[in-house]
Length: 493
Image (cartoon, rainbow, N blue to C red):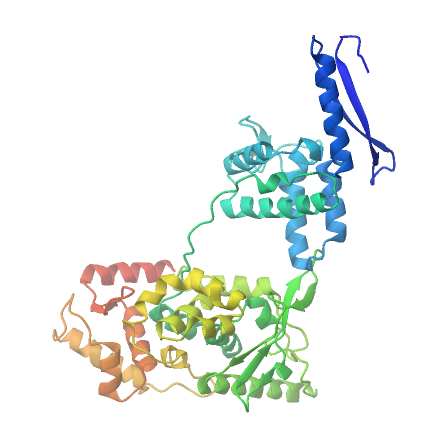
């Protein structure tokens, strides 16, 4: 077809659009000139070959239409789907949603990623007021000038993989010939850097959590098993076999789009059996005993399907995962420890690896897929330390379990005896500021107690500001200025 400008428009029928049901054509305009007819014939031949070889796009669909269709047919877990939808609605659809798939290329995607890394609100460098209320209103202090805040590299990578999955399906449906996300480069992944609490901090966390024995049992189980917070929330009594010392993790709790508590398979869609040490078994026996006592007061019957951890007296409802996160966060803040609930999972993994347990066994306890690939990638930094750290089991590394208020606390507990002896040596000058304390293993042998009990004694002195601890080094007597600083920190918290 010759246009009034002298240019030639090439138009080839390419079938029926699967979305609209209308006839679909491949079109291209060749500029006017002496060779226009020859170039137009080349374009026509190329279009015909693409149609014959089924390499031509079958639709003029936009990215929004593809995402709608893909989300409709993709087999995605509920929690994963919610994350996808939130990211697409907030970051992708407002910017690229109306763009035709045939116009989406690697350059466009990489420019999009770069813009998100500059400002997550896609401001384009323009100043404007960010209103907290839509429509006409009287501005308050909440209506503030926009300040650019970049989207994290991990979030941009997640957006890239979401788009890559949708565009890969579009290639399979022959909506487009090539996946442009496969040619685009997302931000590089960061180096794994888990930050588990050290043994001294772990002892302080356990002691603080045990003010409520039921909450202390949850924190203890998170440390010893490395279970995810959702798995702990979904744990029921029939998942425990205390006689055999085995815990079975089958389900995981999550919140749906309406904020309702639901359950699903574990993250890897596989149940796993985790062996329990004798001390953890005793913790769970006492937890079950308190559960039975509460039911007797309520004149209710025990049910194996009741939750192990519950905010209700009869354990008929499990915790919300975000409640666990928030409560643990408040606990860590009170202690002045920079930690989160997932760090207890890191603690379990690093202590097992440092104790010489093989990576495949650690991966099995944590529920990592790939036969330990994830475990090795994330926790490889600790493998070189395993030859230098004392071998043993995780139970030996755990701090002693605090007694419940009902059992009473004796001032002559073994860890308090050790702490009192060291405190006297510091007071009398036998141990001066900067001197190293005896190794924990030496204290344990000298007093005939476990390594964990000796750890707890040192942790008590650390809390009092008499001892300083640096990860990987032996504890030392604190200098007076360190003691004053510790007291100021305690007062602030």
